[in-house]
Image 1 (cartoon, rainbow, N blue to C red):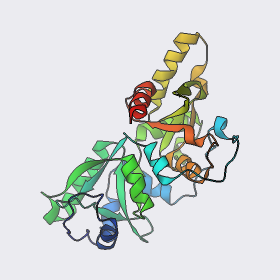
Image 2 (cartoon, rainbow, N blue to C red; image 1 turned 90 degrees about the vertical axis):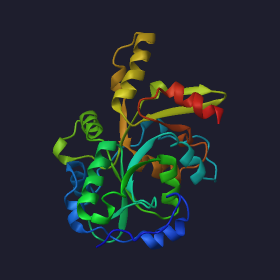
Image 3 (cartoon, helix red, strand yellow; image 1 turned 120 degrees about the horizontal axis):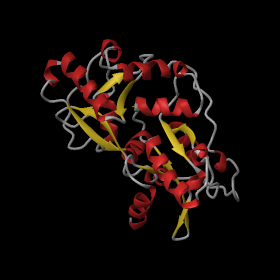
Image 4 (cartoon, rainbow, N blue to C red; image 1 turned 120 degrees about the vertical axis):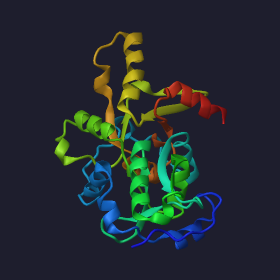
Length: 271
């Protein structure tokens, strides 16, 4: 298996059909097996049957149902502002690897830049011609989502700290792992702004705890941290894609790491 052949692209988001045909080659099984511990954990997890993840409880009861489902454009906009990291060559082509079954080529998207740097180190080690050309590049999740709609395959590499946080919330054995990218939500943080309802979803448990601490101080209530629910990004997106309008799932908005929901919602409302 080989690295993708070079092709001149000014941006990895352009010429999608050409990108798919020219770049679906494989790096080699030895590359994926020699990535860092996070990558190896990802590969093992992909070979296991997915663990059941309960939906966000307060969204499980649909409102008045309509026939139309949420559009891809709508779902992608809920992901705006959150960056992940991958490796590209000098032509801004994504560097692909084979999936654990060797059936297709995929791009790796890391939630931590340091994991993408580890991937870059392996790329430079295995292919001399890319030692100076390969680089780590950021890409936002809304862009990733639209690439997925076009048929380009990706696998996320979650933050190991958030995997541990999710397992602790689920009271699960750490050795069983967690299927997907953990996301965190609480019905206590649902807000209304300009006649629109927003249900913030966080990528970091620390961020939602910080927001809930403000609720605790304001209401002087106890046990607010017990209201944190955990799910996987992949499952939530699938549910959004298949849900009807006015079901409650269109209220979700993903909060970039390090931001407050009020700050992000204010920025989104201006667009």
